Image (cartoon, rainbow, N blue to C red; front, side, top):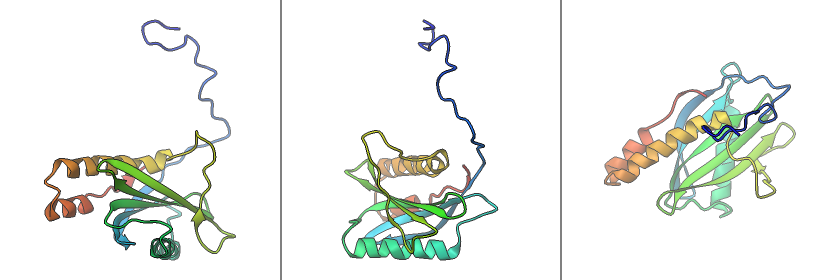
Length: 172
């Protein structure tokens, strides 16, 4: 152990990643959506040369409307955001996050593969599980900061509109 940094003297056995080539993706904000009485900002994440298709976005938004209309997902009166992440040619995550209990982000994860007609709940087994990938965290971090600014505001109509207009666009 290096006493000055608290790090082991040899870190060669930690965080090894083989057979993976990391590539940049783009976060693109879309129009907000209402869902089950909630209001969500919308982000698409994908490689620039292979964006989320309009058909897939429409399918995801219709699916979300059904999830909230049936009560499987209750977003009544909530603000939040959704991320539609294209992971390769035929797999998409739909991550729906809303702000609850004043300052907590709650999330429901859905996924769709090419052989599925629609999105479905993505199973997340075990106590230690995936949350967000590095690309999704660009939008999540922006939303954390934007909602923090909202919490420090008067939280009136004008502040809500400022929050809704505060969108991330760029690399991830």
